[in-house]
Amino acid sequence: MRKIGVLTSGGDAPGMNAAIRAVVRKSIYEGVEVYGVFQGYQGLVTDNIHKLELGDVGDIIQRGGTKLYSARCPEFIEPAVRQKAIENLKAKGIDSLVVIGGDGSYRGAQRLDEEGIKTIGVPGTIDNDINGTDYTIGFDTALNTIIDAVDRIRDTATSHERTFIIEVMGRDAGDLALWAGVAGGAETILIPESPSDMKEVAERIESGMSRGKKHSIIVVAEGVMSASQCADELHKYINVDTRESVLGHMQRGGKPTGQDRVLASRLGAFAVDLLLDGVHGKAVGTENNKLSATRFDKVFEESHMIDEGLYRLSRELSI
Ligand code: ADP
Image (cartoon, rainbow, N blue to C red; front, side, top):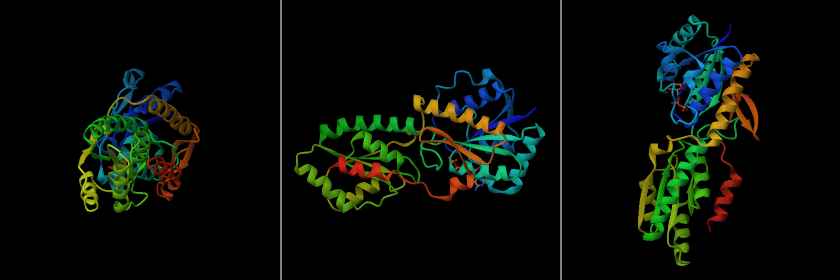
């Protein structure tokens, strides 16, 4: 009988649990034994691999984080370390693996696939920075968490007539900042994909204030600069009362949204379907809301792109 392993790796994301649940339940539904690897690639190397049953994934679909724990395992780039992981899997008769994680995790997954473990990647990261899928699992939840924070900060910004600078996560990608900025009605959105001229930002704030605007909200992606650097840059051109808010890890946790739970359920089950059909070395996703699978090398071929149309719109709506 065929055996499938599942692990979560890299930064945790809301909806990872729903994806684990889908992999486990779909495997068992198809009559396949399924094993949870605890602590990501670290657990593969240390043989922290345990058989999972239906009940092991009960009551987790609504929980943030990951029941399988996640870890960073820098030594996984070394072939000898991966060989140990492969031996541990093979000793249990596991020949297939579902890796739920981000870009870095996919690189490990690609190596494992080349070295004899049939592997499928499932995009689990709040950053939405993976090619081959419209959205990653966790993005929608983090986005809604940020929007909630922006709405609250806006109350204070208006009451005190201040400029608020809100720093959001996203690593090198600006998706969270862009979407949260559009949804939160931010006056300025700073993303790594499009260099911004702080002089122009200052002029926009000034012209808004001269029209009687009570506040200004700047959403800055961590990949551009920190909120405090942004305040320093702004003060070079304009004398405004600024306050900085770094949302930090609150963006990574929390109950997954319905969107993320459904996306995770679809992608987790699809990963199992593909492995059972003999497909591997690919990452799953949805493109135009249809399930899709993209070879790892294609996923890495191009750097992640921002939605240019949405960025243009954000500028048009924040005049
Ligand atoms: P994410 O998957 O969220 O992008 P990381 O970039 O931290 O998170 O990657 C998670 C893990 O994937 C790393 O700790 C490492 O174990 C593994 N990994 C990353 N890059 C490689 C690589 N080039 N080769 C093998 N394994 C890698």
